[in-house]
Image (tube, rainbow, N blue to C red):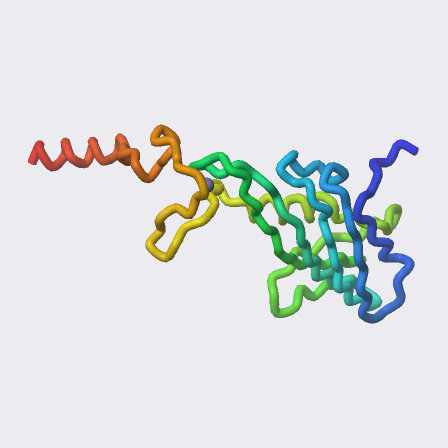
Length: 172
Ligand SMILES: [Zn+2]
């Protein structure tokens, strides 16, 4: 009982050759997602198994709720992403036309766990800047007035690198 619990387990050994669809719903806490994630994570796996390998196309849907960087109102950030990975028994795997990552199947543990892959795929989808939204002019769509000290759009963008450039020009 010392093995780490698998939250998105795929038992490759038990699947016959052919195409399989696997569905999982996971509590975000189970796969160590940060507190912004409170919605269940829906995972659909299209798995194409042949004698030598299993090619997985993994679709992930969930959403995060995070305060807007401007007005602090909660913003829902939908996550709808997918990735591919191939598990092979030996080095003869064919990645196909796409650039799937190819991994070895551990003969002692034919149940793979996609928890980490799913978590990484979700976290990549969360932008650094989280705002209610922007209209076609790039202006903020916030319900509340934005406190001026929080409004990045009102603050002069000061970048020390520009100062260097300016002084260079003056020297010439
Ligand atoms: Zn806002």
